[in-house]
Image 1 (cartoon, rainbow, N blue to C red):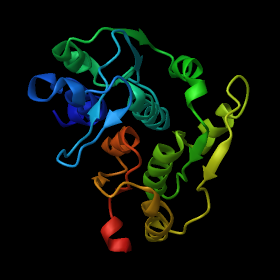
Image 2: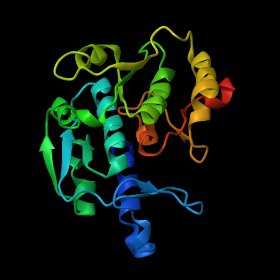
Image 3: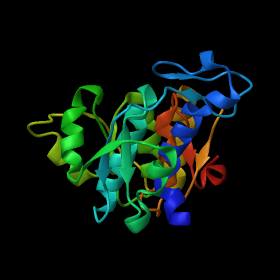
Image 4: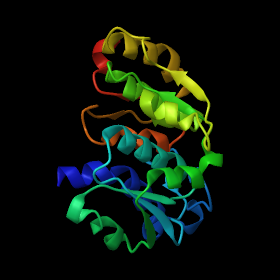
Length: 227
């Protein structure tokens, strides 16, 4: 059950908000984008597209899964359009429950190519400092960017993508505490203060990718200790 929730929490949060017509005024469901009234914990998202794109992340490397779940958050901010599936035999459970129609794509790069005009660049994390995945997630949400490893960054800077690197965190921090101090000083002021999403960076893919769904929220695991 934990594995199912870990993979689908970003998309399901979007769908639950988008399908809230029975419990909220019809006017609160936006045609595109999000609405977030003061009395709501989570925002309302637009209704899902009638036919979604889905990508099979099963068996893909951790960095590819992280990149794709981040892209899912980025694209679904405007309208739920992308579903990342990574649950083996259970991966179709939530789409069936929600009554979603989707087309499966096994190659993640085909999805990137389709939506590349909505991607403004790359944020590169440092594989030697796990906390930079959190920083990259936060900054990618703010900059409409992909969260990538150094290896993926090399690929995505070449044809046919030619994405620019917005920020490269490699070599910037000696440890997670320095990374979170940077997040507190440089990223938190740009983020909404309404939500902080926490999880472990060892998850595949980590659940904290929900950051990309809103207008920027700070992600942390040991952030409290770094203040």
